[in-house]
Length: 274
Image 1 (cartoon, rainbow, N blue to C red):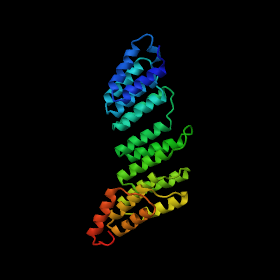
Image 2 (cartoon, helix red, strand yellow):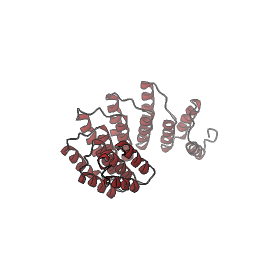
Image 3 (tube, rainbow, N blue to C red):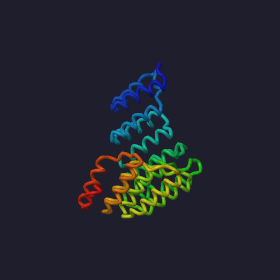
Image 4 (spheres, helix red, strand yellow):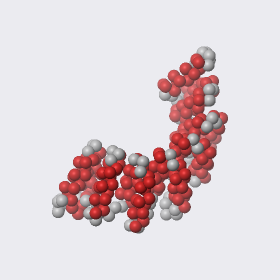
């Protein structure tokens, strides 16, 4: 008689190989087997729910979720997180409140993954007010650990997509106030955000202050973002200075970044610098 762990591994293997329907059919066949029925749990269903969410088959995800409930299999926080993630991936954030209500009804408390997944969904949708509201709810919940770097970087990405420079700077200050060290990924997003708003000087200030404060070097992605910001501001000479610095620090920039820089230098008649 297979255990729930064995069954879970089998279903996960089938789903991971791209056959989500096959994973679901395996679950239904096991549920029809009296010897295996009691070993099928919410974790096993979760593999199929995640699979349908990633395959953008939300009708199937909801159908399987409802079937799981109708069979009396109690969902866990992980199960609900899988459904929240599916909604986030498929632009159905308006259905998240229904899931939260279901968690509350079953006395299941959302965790950091629940909140971060909701934030990701709202950011992908461009609904930044809703994303910031979730952040505030997260900060107010004493039962959950404080927001992590992933949460703040997701919000910063959302600000970059929607051009919210002031909000991005607030997030950078807030994450440091929460004791979270910005990373090179954080800096890359901040440089893009400042570049979009035409604040190239501020982009350089942020990079210098953060790298000095936390004692780390900017990586090739930050350098590339600085170069792009300079080129967008029609300042190829400053971009060339960043490129030269990256060479000194042995950072290998992407070829297309270098090609773009050379073209801009030539177009501006800076042939020697090119």
